[in-house]
Amino acid sequence: MTDFTVGDKDFLLDGRPVRLLSGALHYFRVHEAQWDHRLAMLRAMGLNCVETYVPWNLHEPGPGRFHDVGALGRFLDAAREAGLWAIVRPGPYICAEWENGGLPHWLTGPLGARVRTGDPEFLAPVERWFRELLPQVVARQCDRGGGAPGERGAPGERGAPGERGGPVIMVQIENEYGSYGSDQGYLRRLTELVRECGVTVPLFTSDGPEDHMLSGGSVPGLLATVNFDRHARDAFDVLRRHRPTGPLMCMEFWCGWFEHWGGEREARDPAEAADALREVLESGASVNIYMAHGGTSFGGWAGANRAGDLRLGALEPDVTSYDYDAPIDEAGRPTEKFRLFREVLARYADERDGPLPPVPDAPPALAAPVEAAITEWAPLDDVVNTLGGPETESVAPPSFEDLDVDRGLVRHRLRVPGPRRPGPLTLLGLRDRAVVYVDGVRAASPAGVSTGGRARAEDDVSLPDGVAGPADVEIWVESLGRVNYGPRLGELKGVTGGVLHEGQFLHGVRSRGLRLDALDDAEAVGRVPYKPLPAGLPEGEPLTDRGLYRGRFTVRGAGDASLTLPAWTRGFVWVNGFCLGRYWSVGPQRSLRVPGPVLREGDGNELWVLELDGAGEARGRLTPA
Image (tube, rainbow, N blue to C red; front, side, top):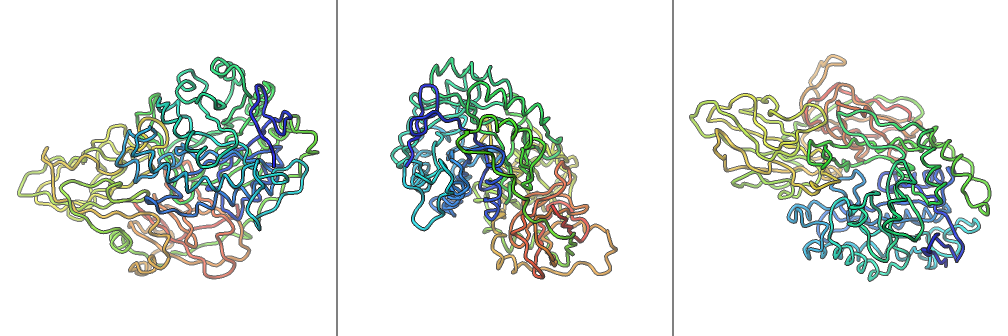
């Protein structure tokens, strides 16, 4: 057992001052078979601690229906074996450029702006979740005897976590709450709940270094930390105005940044980032590098932001890659930033731990490029009819939340009565993209819907050409990711305000949703009525139609790979049933990461592509990564 406490000036480990050199690594963004490698990379960079969020919506997809909550415990065991302490940030809100900031759609849908408050209808599901999750943390606290019997052992390094207890040394309350709300009673109740669940290690909050953020997000009696990318001394001066004593810590040192579809590449000069890191450490502070390794938002879990200073503007969906321009890149390789950070961190490492360990070899890469030939497909209608939820009929289009769709799309069918002259067809409260068919013919994009990655700020859009009646209309709506930060967190998805023709509401809407996780069921995917691709299709000729495409390929020398889809537009990809995430031709991301453990040596590899706009060439290409 180890005693980790918060002193008046320093963190104390069994009574002696210790500096935390931590790095963010999200277990849910790295294939589990590669956790050990990424954690070893953190140690080799000079870190003694790993930090992770916990996404509630990943682990509780429906009320009281839990999925692999033990993944957090397994990750903490891996951190213990790697010789790293661990900081856990369980939310319930996490931001993290993750769908809905980690909050479940089934909760934010009915509650809206009442989330992240002391409202009993929010706190009751939070309590159920924490009582399910936190035993994974409690059993692995540093003041306990390590993991459960038979689990991974201690690393055997002097002073390493697990030698005298578990790896968990701190747990966060909420996340950057001062950027969102001011309900101090809510924060106090979360603190009480975490303690009731058995967490005994120090608790803390983290917020931006601004007065309103620290006053809104800090909790009396808990350590307050700050998040920033540069100007450490100025940030810590603000923190000291609010907390004259206690260890200084930058809980999120943003060494890079995330990217949006249709936006520019994000990169931070490695030398400038290293200088900013040095300033943090010269201030006598501890640090958590965000991100040390970003990984990938597999499964279509990438979130979105709203533009503008108040985060009320255009939707900016996040790309699948969470590379973050981190010192360890998306593929797990060291970068120039890694080398410079290692030099800085080495000066502040505990001398009793000895020299830094060597940099691990990269995981195996795919031995040679592979062409995956697409051989069959099914139209999108057939896919939704086979894998979608039940069809509903209502007076107005139901939201994604009404149809229990977290990630995916919704098809609405309705009729414009007639006879009537051509008039504007308007979708009220559209979030995020719509493809409209009138009597089976695709209409021009609704006015205001960008063909790039950024959706419009306003939510009411109209077809540019009038629609005459009678007419049958299909509206296919796609979510580009729920907002993960700001006041529009938890906003509904879909056509949220109804459909108008000439200012008249159109009723009698038949709707069916398709959840992405419906494709997790390989047996169900096999029941989709596929048909062969058109015979005699010239090589390189695009397929054009929307739908689910399937192909098979052979691998000789499985390893990490990148997948590209020539001339495809927008959709999602699965390799051997593992969802790689969203692709989109608007960039800046041009390929998807394929973890080596997903591939099978030899025959029997499968590629599924769910194209939502216009398919490209009848192939995918995997190259070594």
